[in-house]
Amino acid sequence: MLNDIWVEKFRPGTMDEIVLDSATLEYFREKIKDGKIPHVLFVSAPGSGKTSLAKILVKELGCSYRYINASDERGIDTIREKVIGFAQTKSFDGGIKIIILDEMDGLTPDAQRALRNTMEEFSENAGFILTANYKNRIIEAIRSRAQIFEIVPPFDGCVKRVVEIIKTEGIKVSTEQKERLMSLIKLMYPDLRSIIKCVQQYTINGSLKIPEKLSQVVFPSKVYNLISENKSANEIRKYVIENELEFNSDYLLLLKGLFEHIFDQDIPEDKKRNSMLTVGRYMESHQQVMDFEINAFCCIIQLLQIIN
Image 1 (cartoon, helix red, strand yellow):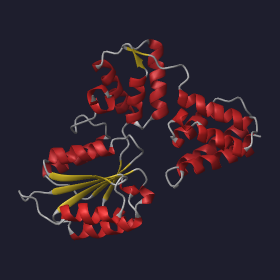
Image 2 (cartoon, helix red, strand yellow; image 1 turned 30 degrees about the vertical axis):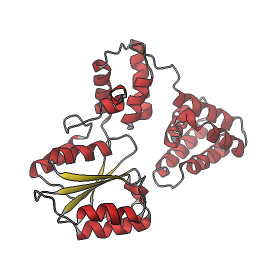
Image 3 (cartoon, rainbow, N blue to C red; image 1 turned 90 degrees about the horizontal axis):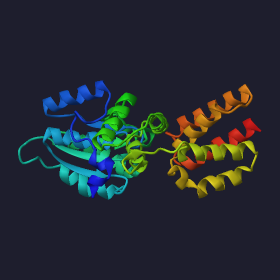
Image 4 (cartoon, rainbow, N blue to C red; image 1 turned 120 degrees about the horizontal axis):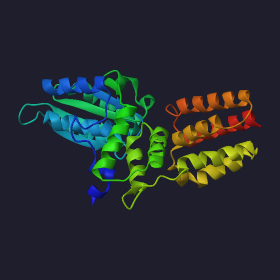
């Protein structure tokens, strides 16, 4: 059944298959040759390959490891019962042991403080591979104990991977669809996982059939229309929340769609410039906030003031 889901079927299993920048790729290939890696923290937007890279590393190192999804197991008991128990013993063959803490920015502050002590105390027995969507949610004591890597797949590499998948599946792509495919990739980059999901979704009877207006583009245009009609902030917020399925609850994608839509509008240059700068600032702050919806709503309030 998993072979019918492209993100699983084409999940990278080796360093040769993963889409990474050349410097990061070369660094970890050297570490694999050395047979060990330092504590590392992979940070990036969802769908960029953090977890795949972590699993490839332990596979190619041939070491024993434990995988923990920290967004599901968030508390201090996870550190006490699952991490410390694994880290405090040596492996049977005397080799390195690795603990993968996936989405560890979901750990509670108490759990993160306990993890800091564990990383220090058992560093001779175990290495840690940590992944996170938001670096600012990780305490400084942990960040200072790990080498931090921003995992951003190169755009050309994402295009190449999608083309490889299309060819492997024997999908027909018309000239018009090639243009729409590039638009889709640009819209969703660097979330390669979501790009692949969408390409499969729009593959019908062996042909790629991406609609002329993607839902991720259409919905931001609807939000913009409400803003330009000077609807109340509360009315717009209610509309966005009730229709989160239209943009998969991805508020960064919503902001990006707003930016692109504003760029195409025939409005006074000062309003266009200030609106785009405002959306850009809120796209930046998206990585720092605790609530994505509130961040996007604050952006909409400012756009109401600028455009009307």
